[in-house]
Image 1 (cartoon, rainbow, N blue to C red):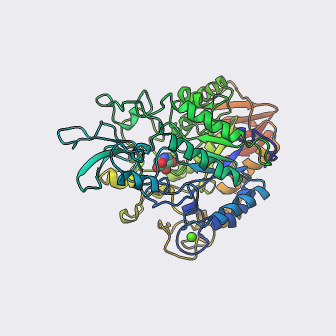
Image 2 (cartoon, rainbow, N blue to C red):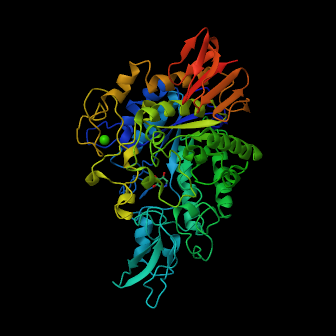
Image 3 (cartoon, rainbow, N blue to C red):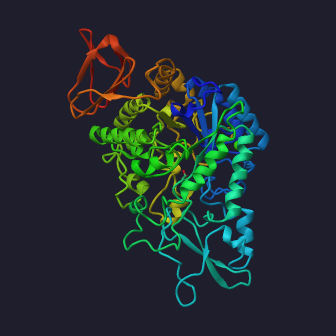
Length: 558
Ligand code: NOJ
Ligand code: CA
């Protein structure tokens, strides 16, 4: 990594690789990815040239939501390994110069968490119940939910319990699956427990946490109904009693102080990256200097493949981040979103939050032009990695893996599938195991052919091994770009300036001496061939000039 352990603000320019542990590599042939599998393949991350890895939840969990349903925050899921394996991973990653970020899931636990079990066994209004959000129902016999809030995964956000005496009783709140009860962040046990969780992992050397649904933990007091018609996903990001409440600031400041306690350790102060689907102006409040360090910038991910939309998103992101002195981040995909290669090949390639239909349902079943999607995804990563700030790469993006859109229904595991009444296939299509080598499934991922999600028979071309031997592969492009980021002082944190160009072209400079051009239009842009550092696809040269065509990107020295 370019940052040494003493570089305290490494996260401002880092390229972070997201590992989805269940799907990265299976070391013991049980068909489930694991921590040893990650350790065995850390060399892939080093050769790729990233600075850090972020590991999606690896905690004990019944896996009702891929591990975002945590039953013990201070241990490792036995399917994934042991605490000793986790320690070995952190140690090995640090030896290799890689930072390690893990996932904190503070909005909800699993229903298998011992405190939730205690809450169910205790009486209404007991201290045990108060750690979660229990309420009496409405209606004559409490048979109606306490309010009209929806679950992100479909239908209502409340579940009625059977009281220990066998009668139908109170309801508990769950923003996500029914098996994921929301914590009560007004309860001091909860607040103190999460302090302990942070220190537990910081003491083991992890460099930071990604905070799951960082805009959800605090709810408006009194839990008022959403206005009529406000139950759709599109409303969840605006003024809503469910999201982005002022009380979040105090929790963020408390956590920042804990991360800063580690300033004098070899790893330096620790960091937080927030997951929050919010417009820029709301998001950057989380990044004030005494709150969180950084945050995913999903407006970039959800933008359609259109020069105007990306230009606006980039300009607004940078201005908003600058207003609080924070560094921006860029992300094209993760374990919740349709893979870029497939998304950019769709007629509608963006996700607009104001669109009321569920985001995944919008993409499923619509035709994809895969060749077009691949061409655009290559240009997109050149844009992403040329922008000021840090960037996140989701495992498999560096191979150009497509979304697996035809997983058999009986193999689908995402709770969205069930909760949407089998109308939204959910996110399994971007969670299929990584192909490493060989010509048949499971492509070196495991020695067991029964993988937790089936792998397509057509992936021989997209393995790490096959792409390593192909200079025109996605992997070769990613390695080139990341290597350049390490040696080129213009890239990473810093500023950028737009150059004059047609509306269909994004053209900007970074100092010293770097320029990026992405062409979305039908008219070629020509530049001096000698200046080219990298291009998304091969360029046509004529008389010392090269033409950058539609859906192509180029990095230049100036
Ligand atoms: C966001 C996570 O990325 C997603 O996978 C999960 O389902 C929800 N938060 C709930 O934890
Ligand atoms: Ca395994």
